[in-house]
Length: 440
Ligand code: CAO
Image 1 (tube, rainbow, N blue to C red):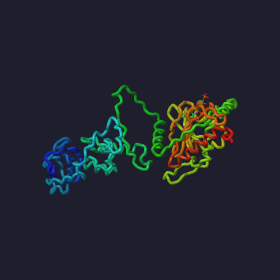
Image 2: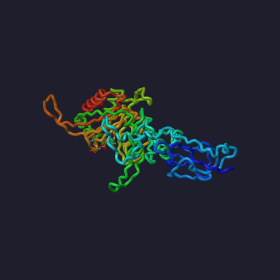
Image 3: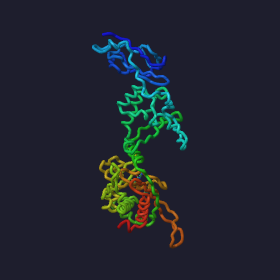
Image 4: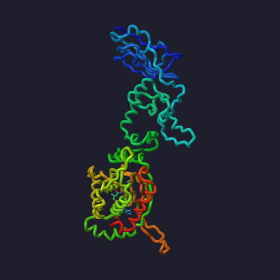
């Protein structure tokens, strides 16, 4: 079996082009037409295929070398019975890249350290012009990398090149595929591609001392869910203020009795009652969109979740059948489930089956906020700290000091119209301002 020299064939008008990839190692076997090396000029990149099958004995070229017609690439021992005898000294034709590079501007730095502001409309956006964020542009990659990407189903227009002039390497494709497989399936959940800019990878220690901590497991899970919900459901937040002066008096008057029963009766228990009442009046809020988004699934049960702050992050326990419970029962469930959440003893089923969620920051502070919907629920009620406000009384024609509770209702605009959003908070306002209606 003869060891043959494999030379760079006629590559046109190029007498000194860069070797940008070497695909073979001594001892490896190659098939006829396998790519041995990739060359790149200013205008094009091309693979040099093996003219016959055999075993690589010695590689005579390395990345960074210059090559021209006749440059020795490798010594290859031709396989028995192959067409090597005839083909041995006839160099194979190079395979040009499908697209010449001449009219593709080389991408700018692949990973910016500082995000650039989005340019106003009509002004070319320097970030959007980068190859990896410009679908439809021809990516800067060798034929072998293109073939590799095709085999893996990788979209090269979305891969950031780390090679010279932003050229995409095989490793870049591998890293991209790995990233797609490991990241949450935000893009699949949404109707189209997000095409979001990659978060800049900044070394913060250059600005001052830093400490890195692993995110707790709950934060990782809730973060991924919140992100999906935020990008999937078009959120609108409706604000309102409920006069809870009388309700607060009533709550206080019930405190002794609650204490006797070993229950702490907070405003949240009453808010749960009011929420069930409003859900009955507006059934679209007690619903979920089907996964295909073409049907509304209306629920005939009333399980209400509540956001609970724990040292490890946010969890949402669910109180079942709130419509069948009185405020004392609800307050007891609230206390039990929050204690379990903080002791990390919540069972999975205690966080499932919710119809609607209440997120109360009233015990902490703030005037209002925009809660993120706990999808596939379609609305969430945010509650902030109550405070005494001057409210105009038409009868006495004077401002009265009233205890006002700020409500922030976020809803999924695919399911709920703005008018219904405002009707729902108005309904809540009426319920909370009249204890008799609430407890009926
Ligand atoms: N306005 C004024 N005071 C309020 C209030 C309000 N809207 N809501 C509660 N309070 C008071 C309570 O009356 C209680 O006062 P006392 O200690 O004097 O009795 C105090 O604030 C603490 O209440 P609490 O937090 O123990 O009880 P709660 O039923 O209001 O809330 C729970 C329970 C589990 C919801 C709460 O502890 C919690 O974790 N809240 C955080 C939720 C959260 O992180 N949400 C953000 C999620 S992002 O959408």
